[in-house]
Image (cartoon, rainbow, N blue to C red; front, side):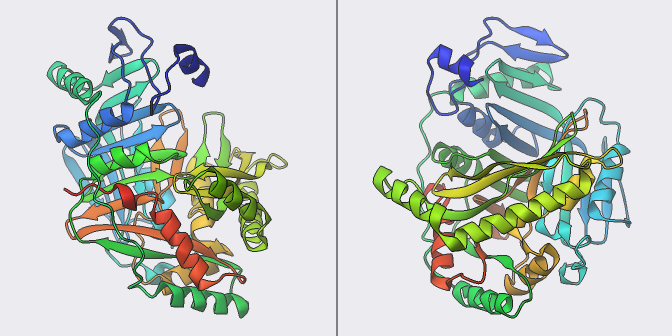
Length: 460
């Protein structure tokens, strides 16, 4: 992909230019050969057009999909499973773990060659980690939908599937009009206030670590926004200033969100290779070459950050090994530094081949929640999160998921995001607390992470 784009000599954000020269039909899709110089503007405009119902936008490296107008789906609450298809919904209790319930429900739908898209909340983990007492009975654990319409944008052009001819024309017109359109104006948010008592909660976590209750916990704070947010416009402006591993934009089940994910929780490809990408250890980024270089040098030699990262990788390795074929689990790129918007992280990649008797949902359940968003040991860390974070996390530190008809599954960690419901809009960020943590520094780290989104919020 990069080689092809380099040959075209294009360096714009998103960097995608169609190489097709005429309209063609491929497997029921309609494709145009128009230039798409700004795919972020394209998918943001489709979301903002409000013509195609609920939607999920998902970005993988070099490709975007706008999936809209659900024809079916699975909604899992703490006490109820709802499965819908073609206008009919059945509801009832569920058994097993949330991962098993969603997996069974999706398997029972006639999805054919369609990909499912949606999200799972942090509370999804409570059943496998023995923390259900902390979960509200009506908490949403997962919401996954199967779209009628899919619009895919990559270097091959624009491909539309499932739409009527009129809708396809509308989609084409919206994308064309978005190219070259001006960026929205930001309404930056101050994130330096601490009404949640974050520093005191970090101190409490450090004390519990000192008492031997656990090794690490990720504590977060919520920043309420005093105005309604234009989520698609915030996604467009924020993506211009971020370098995510994945990004997403969604409106599903009364929740709107947009984010710039720094890492994968879990990915299982069609060859059954399981991947996770723990990021732990943080410094600010984007403050000038000299300052960024000094921060990087400080990051890679800071004992607290190194310990935090090493124990995260150790836990990720053990989790993949638990669902992988023997002797296939390995670490690569150990403690590399990766830039993610306003911050830079220590990063590693852990992979293994999924065992024959395990499903992709088994892998996700084992790796979820991300060790970099929960704690170590994970059960004790999650218990501490529920006790010390106070507010339910919901989508924050959960995952946006895609489930492909070939068996592939991908779950990207939801951080660096903005969230909105009918009750209001908010940001949220956390920091990894270990025995060496200082409350003031951990608060500063949350500010650095919030700066990936806070300067780019667009008021509705």
